[in-house]
View 1 (spheres, rainbow, N blue to C red):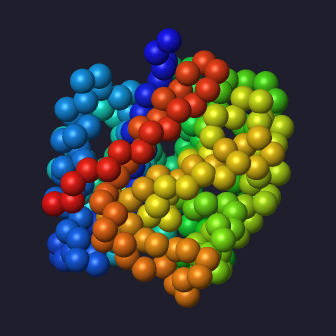
View 2: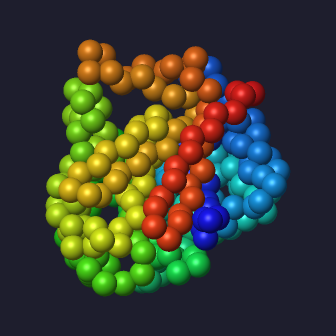
Length: 264
């Protein structure tokens, strides 16, 4: 049996406005290589999902550099706002969906559906918490509760931030969704139809399973980080090449495969 839906989960490309490398790694050439790899798939994916930090500095020039590279994709792409992103510029340069109220700076929250699968995208970037922590407003949590009814189409939640502590003191103090427990509680009624919660931000692949809900972060297009429990803070790990997740949705299961590619 073949999957009825396949997509590529990428994250944290961290384009810089001046093209300067991030920890010695140039973002644009690696993102361009990844786009060409995806375009060369023997069977095209249904779409690409980018879970945040297209930019590293929120500058318009960084999005101007990203736009022609990502425009080469032969499949649709959906964006999530990361803590280094500007929703207005994701909308202006990359065609992210407009806000219902017409405000280009409004949080990048939206829903899309592909082949009967429903995806809720949430923007966890708020000034209520210090960067790079994330947070969801009560309005956003109410929307999650509305989406997370026991009955309905298969559902995937997408955001930039992991919702739980990961066993690294620095990461747990600085990188998580501060009210991730509230998100998890809101999702519990839908766990029978919930495919996964997908995120980025960690620059490494990770999986958490809690109460039957699976949380998955994708590896980074930019440098990976090491964040073991004994590390005082994450550090770039240039021995780990850039990577992406290939995600297959079957009727009765989800299969996630990680693929590395050679760094430019």
